[in-house]
Length: 131
Image 1 (tube, rainbow, N blue to C red):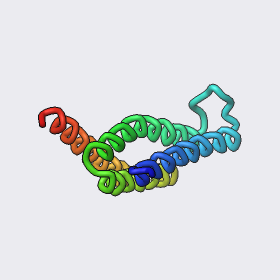
Image 2 (image 1 turned 180 degrees about the vertical axis):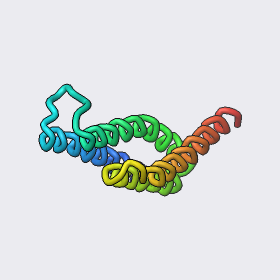
Image 3 (image 1 turned 30 degrees about the vertical axis):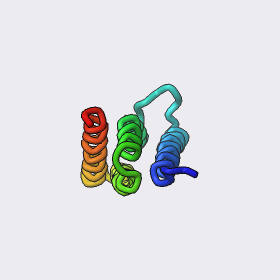
Image 4 (image 1 turned 90 degrees about the horizontal axis):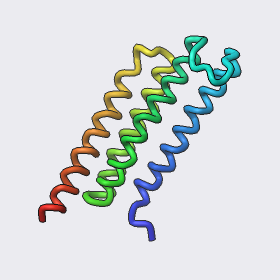
């Protein structure tokens, strides 16, 4: 029996988000004629590329704190905070694609969720070391 179904589902959903970001970059490459390995060209391609890279950068930070929080503190709250992070990242990506100036709210939601997971996970690990 899996004791961490929520974090496992979030990890899977995060992988799908990364795939969707990569697919968006690929569609923009084709649509605007940007040949690999170029990472500049049409402004909408550059936006798609930044969405992908920023999301990838955040996933590398998010997944470890999600799992540390889930294992050492609470799978339920890790799932709740991780869901907010995922919603924030999707909100960020959609907003950024429409108008880069509107990406802030989704970014803020994801960063606050990440911060809560990071602080909670760190506290739980350190507390476990001291007790």
